[in-house]
Image (cartoon, rainbow, N blue to C red; front, side, top):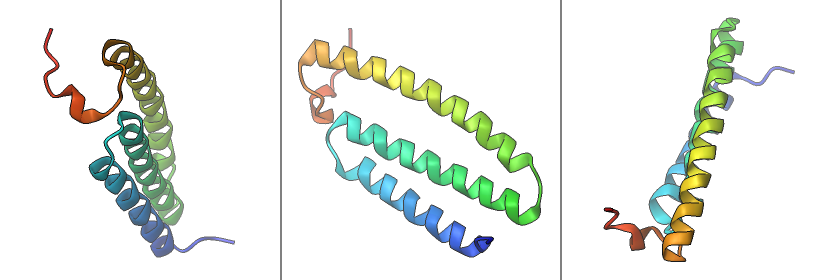
Length: 101
């Protein structure tokens, strides 16, 4: 069973909006990072759906690259979260407005 291209795009748009809402409305840094990951997954879904619709593998190859970039981003973000927790003992984004040496 093949999912119609319009349904995949609608689902990806809904995921992107949910991720954007999470980024804009949450104050916890971890929840903001989860929202960014949801938005990246929505973009990956669009590439996969377009790749299946036009029967090209370019979108799937790009998703593999995007997954590698996402894994690197998660590793850096986790290191930043651990550093910020050790420094301020809080992960509320409003507390980090003056991040200078």
